[in-house]
Amino acid sequence: MILISLLGEQPIPNLLPLWQDPARYTAARFAVTESTLPLAGRLASVIAADPRLGHIAVRQPVLLRPYDIGYCRAHLNSTLMEHLLHDEEVALNLTGGTKIMSLAALQAAYGSGVSLLYVSTETRRLIHLRSDGSEMAREPFDVHISVWQYLAAHGIESSLHPAFRAEGPARPVETPKSGDALERRVETLLRDSGAFDDVRRNVFIRKAGRDEMVKNELDVVAARNGQLAVCSCKTSLEVGKEDLYELAALSRREAFGIYCEKVLVCEHEPSDAVKNRAAADRVKLVYGTKIEHIAETLRAVLD
Image 1 (cartoon, one colour):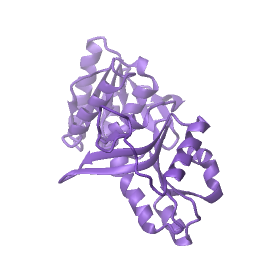
Image 2 (tube, rainbow, N blue to C red; image 1 turned 45 degrees about the vertical axis):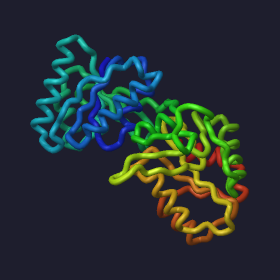
Image 3 (cartoon, rainbow, N blue to C red; image 1 turned 90 degrees about the vertical axis):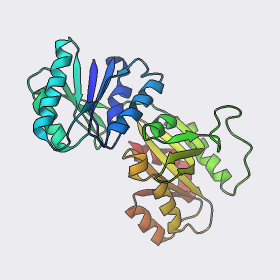
């Protein structure tokens, strides 16, 4: 089966159906606009590099006009008919793109027998629909990916080595830092819980910015069911709002996507001002004795 996906700014909804059931699909194709065409190239690279998705061939993108419903409908309909005439089974992912593109896709597929699907972020479900838009089934997400896979989908290069070396030791000799013990404690608690698909500490990341390569380091990162939790660990007696700003900047929606949650882990209870700011920035606070239960907290955040 070939999966045709409307491509928006968020990459994960286009990969989730493939990660969920890789054996179901033999090919993927992205319906793009001029602005999302580069993302299609990145996703093609992610699919080719993924051991479980390597058998999936990525076909030529379908170029659409995001706010021209007639053009989108006609172009998608001819694309669907072309595949059906070649006896290819087709599924159409309606999740991404503009609302005009989604409406045009539904019109293009209507009555064709092509199966439709929608990735529901809020309910953590894949919703399967018939070609007339009527619902067939809902399937809970059951996706197991690594931290590296999530970051790569967002165009973020990651490594355990600050120089991003592919060869040599996985991690160089580290200069001791005041927060090392807390970071190791959080990493161990998350790993030992068995609730996460991948847990990493001291992950170095870089991504091309407007003028230069932007580099940062993440204290502890955990992946679960297609989502990511980024944990910043602080041991100082007073945690300031700048610590929240730093975390928010590292994992903002535009960089890490809508499937990323932010967590600030503090050895000491923060001030009310920091608590209020964290709530406003949707940063989960874990501090004091609550750290012992961080695995349960993160699991609840990601479920």
